[in-house]
Image 1: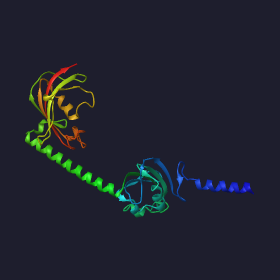
Image 2: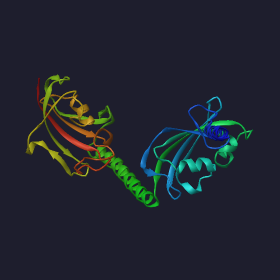
Image 3: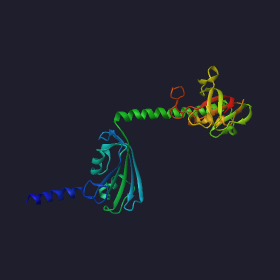
Image 4: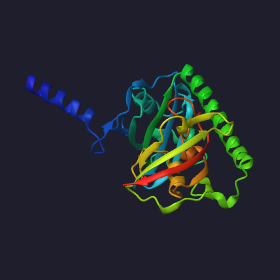
Length: 284
């Protein structure tokens, strides 16, 4: 009798753990899931959180059907099916979960409009990625930061336009993403990769604020072609110079300090930089 009870118990649990898809776990009768990637467990999903989700929908033959994105939606207002919601509430930012089930399992007609399916029993696969999880306070703060960054980006674009006009750069002086003008010709060959350069420069923001001046200190020395020594735009300009030459460069933010600005805070995000450059020496 005890043996029979043990066998029945084992069969019960085996049945509960059975799955129609290898590698997946069963959530209910026809809905299955698999955790494809684990995110940041310190940022869990919660009912009152604002989440950004991306859902890629495939049919039974794994042909793409649709992509649906929820951007910063309060989690409790989502119209996803209860088993999926319950599973997501166990997850975190960065999680990637694969679901397999029917149209009815996913409640697709509630959240995939205008796309609809003829049969509620049609099998679908949904790849769901939790891109972002924010509390209400974090959302307010992040939106304020994003507005500030957008303002700085617009300021950078205005500065770039004003600098082009004030320095009277011509369209033909725009080369390889920067504005470049030779002020004084040099002699010799252009610097080659592996050579060491000695450079003096004065760097300013378009509003006239000084960024750096090597003439009141030591010149800059660096190896041509070695990465992460100088700004990309600066390297582009230097490649056009010969020993003894002087030039004027206007470098846009994407080839300067970009959206973050300089680490010291002198150059703000998205700011272009004006350089007056002298190539003092070229050596090996």
